[in-house]
Image (tube, rainbow, N blue to C red):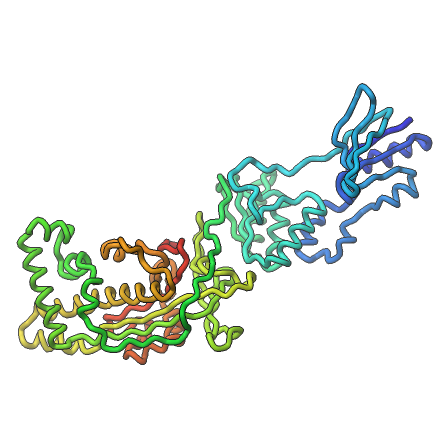
Length: 489
C-alpha cells in the first residue's frame, strides 16, 4: 500500500510516524510545500525577540531523521497543486526545480494546515505588514527589522501569539502598540486575570488600545524627497522695515482679539460699520507713527539644520560635523488615529537619509514697553494699548514673513495665486510649530532652540518659565513636508 500525506509539521509528520508504527511495509510519501517539516511554532516570536538566537533551535525534526529512522519518503519544497481522485494521483510542483510531476496513491491524507486570517482590508498587502505562522514568516520579519530598522510596530490582535509578538518586538527595541477589538487581551481569560496581563504589558512599555478596530491600513505620512536648503548658516535680520511687515498682520486678531471688536472684521469694514472703521483709522495712524518715529525694533534670526527622526525624537545635527547631535527634541504622539508625531515629518535615522528643518526667532523689540509706558504717562491710553497690540500682532506677522522667506529659499514657494488671507490660514506647503502648543507642548524645549539659534543676538532672552522676553517675540520650528499640519495630542 502507498500512502501520500499532503503537509508536514504537526499534523502530517505525526500522521506519518503513527502510520509507520502501525505498519512496517506501507510506502509513505510526505509532501511539504515549505523547507521545514517540523518546527517549534511557539518559539517563532522568541527568535524575532532574540531569546532564541539560532534558526536551528526552531527545527524539531529534519527530513533525514524521518527517512533514516522511519523509512518515510520526505519531499520538501514540494507543493501538491491538484488531486485526480478518479486516477488516484496528485500533481506535485517542485519549487526548487520548477518541474511538475504526478504521483499515485492508494490512500491520501490531507494535512495542509491553515493560513493566517488576513481580512480583505484596504492596504493589507502594503509593505511592512506581516503575518506569523511559519519559519519563513519569522525569517522575513527578522530580516526586515534588521535591514529597515523600524522604530514602531503595531500588533493587531491580543491573543496568545499577539501578546508574545508584542513582548518580543519590545525586546527587539521597537515601540509597540497592540490593537484589539475586544475590551481585553486573551479573550478566554476572566477580566480579573486579563488585567494582570494588561499591567505586565504596560510595565514593559507596550501601548494597549482595546475596543479598537482596524478598518484599513495606511501609511499616514509618506517620506518625500529631501528639500535641501541653500545653506545651513545663521541668517540675521536687523531693523527690518516695519512697513513690509504690515501686510502680514492679521487684522482679525488685532482688531477683534486685542482691541475688542465683535464680529468678522473684514465684513464689518466692507459694510462700513462705524466702530470698525474708526478703530481701523486709529490702528493705521499708530502704524504710521511706528514707522515714522521708529517705535519698534524688528529683528529676526533663522537657520536650517540637518536632522533625522528616531521614533518620537527629532535629532538635530551640527551642520559642520554631520555625525554630531547638537540637540534632541522629544515630541508626544497621538494616542488615537492617525497617531501623528512631529518627528514623522522628517526621514528616519534608519533610512540613512539626512533631512532638514528650519528654526527662527523674530521680535518687534524691547523698547515697546518703555514707549507704551510713556504714552500712558502722557495720558495717551488708547495709543499705549494700540502700540502694545500692534507689537504683538506685528511679531506674528513678522514670523509669517520670515516663514515665507524660508519656504522660498527651500524652493517650496507659495502658489502665484495664494492670497494673503490664504497665507495667514497656512494654506501653503510646510508648517511651523511653536513650543507650548499641542503638537510640541514642552515650553522647556525653548532652551534647546535658543542654544541652537542664539537669539540673544537680536536681544531676545528666556525667563525662568521659558517665556520669551520681550513679549512681542515669536519662535518656531519649521518643517517642509507637504503633509505637515497642526494637530492635537
